[in-house]
Amino acid sequence: MRFDEHAEYAFPVDFMCACVNVSRSGYYEWRSRPESATSQRRQQLRLLIRTAVDHADGTYGHRRIRAQLQRWGVAVGVELVRLLMGEMGLHPCQPRPRRSSLTTPADTGAIPDLVGRDFTAPMPSVKLVGDITYIPTWSGWVYLATVIDCCTKEVVGYAMDDNYRTPLIIRAVAHATGKGKVRAGAVFHSDRGSNYTSREFGDYLASVGMTRSVGRTGICFDNAMAESFFGVLKNERVNQMVYPTRERARRDITRYIEHWYNHRRLHSALGYNTPSEIYAEHEKQRLAA
Image (cartoon, rainbow, N blue to C red; front, side, top):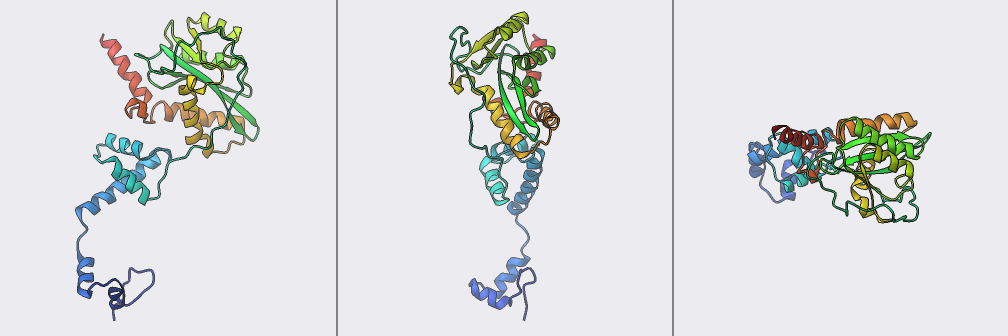
């Protein structure tokens, strides 16, 4: 009497063949049959998918995983990647329910909206958006102010502190200008938060040759690009972490922005390229001209 040694529980081969209505000879023929080319390729793809998921810290869905595989020279369809990821139990980070963040005062109406929900730009450094969000730590909130380029989607400037007063957003813009990522006459767009509509911030923008633009009160779509980055940051990083101190949060968020988001993360809005690649391509064209 033969037993199948690969089974979790050993049963006679004759008994198992009878249960599934196959012949004993057919079973042994199936066992001795070499692995098909399709099966071998799928096993190779599973290994590459696992590598790509680890490369992205588990943040990529099947479309970005497929884009990453294509960058590695692996031709594969998006549906096959979705199927294999499902079989492997690999799922990207899911966003938590959205909650309102910082309050916005009544609409002053004095500052125009120069963007009109058009978050594109023909070149880097000419149209920028900004916003503030908060990050929880055991020691209290860390407030993050950002400056994002509409052309490259790069976070070109940012600043963090334990408050969200006007100097915080000035430091974020100064970070961008100090890196040479702002052209003279560039538009800076934000919501109508009191800091962004303050005279202090307006005077600073004027001093560095930037033009101020704001969306309407309470209309999140008017600054959707800035808010979208915060959604990605929290979904891919902050919601996966626990920060015991503000300093730990600062270091981790800085690393996420500098080493992942700007230089390695594939952006669907950029044709699955990175912000640094798009910036480099524009610089190459500028120098060639």
